[in-house]
Image (cartoon, rainbow, N blue to C red; front, side, top):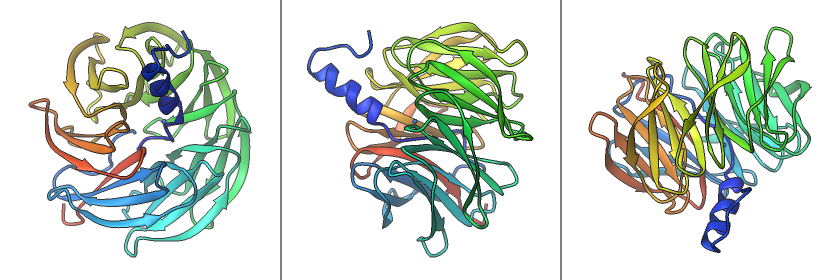
Length: 329
């Protein structure tokens, strides 16, 4: 699911083009791969695209609020929720593909995480240092939780006990305990953290240290125990459903890094489109869906072969992606 607009990456790419260096927003789908629909938010063209995975055809384009980013879908496949940088969260009926509700979340809303029971959303508000807690039935903000500076990416433990927020300005991860909706830990992680992912057993949290590498947080000690070397500008991240592999997009080198979560070593790199910023992994671990901001495409990747089996054009500056399998699967 992942998790937020990519203006950070746009800025970085622009600086790279000018020859400068910068400073020195999945998770996995809840259902299997195969026939189904891919939902892609495009922050540049302010829309949501519905794409048939098998044919690669765009079935519908839905207008959204300004600069849509993070997107998640409910477990029953009835609704999608979109974070809009304009400060709102939209609820979309996936049967009619219409926006049925909007709520003011905060300032600069970017990332979303959904509780396993589907009743509560957590939304990062980058510009006012908060995470909003939103009821999905009535789409009302229940409370706002103060976190660090520049919260953007967000991930939830599989059991729904903890929410992890990367704060890109204060260079730390806020750990929210959902039973009390308060920050119980703050973990320094290096410079400008962005993408974040959690292993299914909640043992490790991976955080993209945007200029340098991937920081590994041990959730027992709440400390960084290792830094995984990456190409410049690691960004979107996801962990395979079986917990064995970590996938991270490398913005500046147009590939996806694959790391073994046991050894915490890089085992593979997979070529993608231009400037990959987000990634989603299917529940069976067979497929990856990678958003390429530079080429305005989504790469559909067969992970067994490490090959792009289809490249599909999307809107301007794709920023969020999620997959919904066919109801028959």
